[in-house]
Amino acid sequence: MFKNITDFIGNTPLIEAKTLLKNPNITLLLKMEGHNPGGSVKDRAAYNMIKSALDRGEIDKNSKLIEATSGNTGIALAMIAGIFKLKIELVMPENSTKERVQTMRAYGAKVTLTSSDIGIEGARDYAEQKVAEEGYYSFNQFANDDNWKAHYKTTGPEIWNDTEGKITHFVSAMGTTGTIMGTSTYLKEKNTNIQIVGAQPTDGSKIPGIRKWEKAYLPKIFNPNKVDQVIEVSEAEATAMAKRLGEEEGVFSGMSSGGSVTAALKLAETLESGVIVAVICDRGDRYLSSPLFDD
Image (cartoon, rainbow, N blue to C red; front, side, top):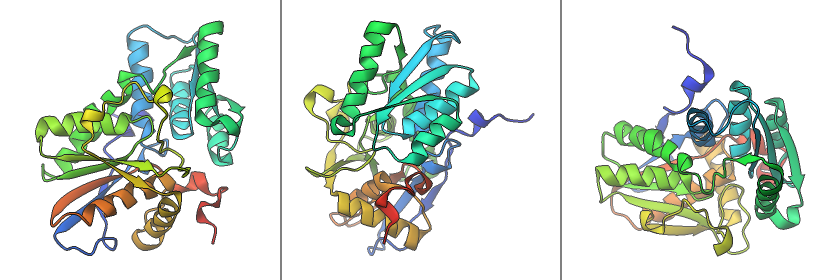
């Protein structure tokens, strides 16, 4: 029996980094989420949010859907909404890369750009106003349990199984926090000693996909008790690491992945041994019009 494209969401490769670490007693594994059909880790949450809402009867083909996104969730929602013949409007800051905007449109979504001065928070406010005043339905990835449950059902088990239970540390960038919440919940059920580490930008750094939220915008799905340690990463560090990943490991990824791996290497400096899994959130091709890979 032939499969459809949603059957290939998840079960992404877990590869060993060969050049980044100097300590032979530490293994650094990279979870290659760019291998999802929509090109990022967000395919998992987007599929689970849409499919679960359909199954519960909360939405149908007549629903007006809207979502604020910094990019990857929007691409994933656009792809999966199209597959289910749903119409969706995606709201993002106007400084989002051209590749992201065009990819969403290629999947059939309407894209609305809000002022870059107010960032993703402004996009969230716009979407919430449409929900309140015009009868739109928002998945609200920041408060949607189907977001983190996608990773509880898939990402966590995959990492546990692929490392044969040997994982000691899990490192993830923190944006909506769905990836780290769901994966943490699963892994801690398997072994409470596994350390969960979140990457967060330093003050003043802008790293797409990683945020240090003001309290008013902190994702409702975030539970600080599920993160053992937060490591801060600068914009310069994330950029440099994204370039290193491409040049040294053959891993073509974006700045948030650079942030995740930078945090993993900072963590490794404090360890004598261990098996670290870091998330490579997406692919680098959606950053080509940005300065990320400029000389």
